[in-house]
Image (cartoon, rainbow, N blue to C red; front, side, top):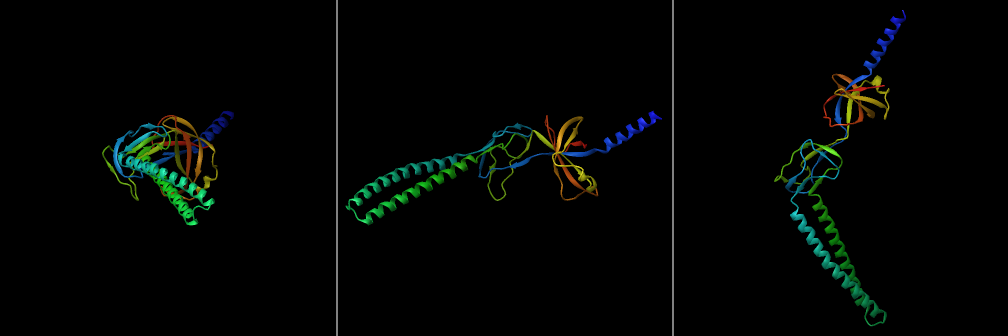
Length: 251
């Protein structure tokens, strides 16, 4: 009798564990499509599909000769206008001194002030133009925004890139250190989970500690059944692929 009760309890426990295993599909935790906001010809591409890239790594370069020339032109204007503004300041100081001794008229003082204001404004415009041109030059270099893996590469050296309202997608990156396991739960079970709750994720026979990242608020239909999307975030010790099947073991 006791043996029968023991096996009954074990069978019931196994059913509970099995019932708590939910089929899921792996998704990228953070996926970005990268482009450049300036036009130009691709000079070099430094990453390929599957490459692990660190934050800040240069992924590609456009030919920046035109933008370098604009920066140099802006700097030349700043040099010239700085000299003119300094001369205007000296002239204003001299006129103010003469005006204090009633040697020159008010109109001369006003002219000196006007020149000083005009030259200072032109110098400020030149500095703003240099910052703008430097930004354009910086934008010819595409860098990784975070530690990632290259998912898609759609660019080759020599290709022309045109900036516009719909920029060309040149590369797609995904965060390399973590993944999402996404599954659906019916309305009767969605409230059994909480944000941040610890769960376990099994992928290809390996277990990963995870936590609930997002619980859907709007119902969706899957295979004719209505449910809510649940995302579980977990660290990936090795590179996994989006779309792989997974099992989320709920408590």
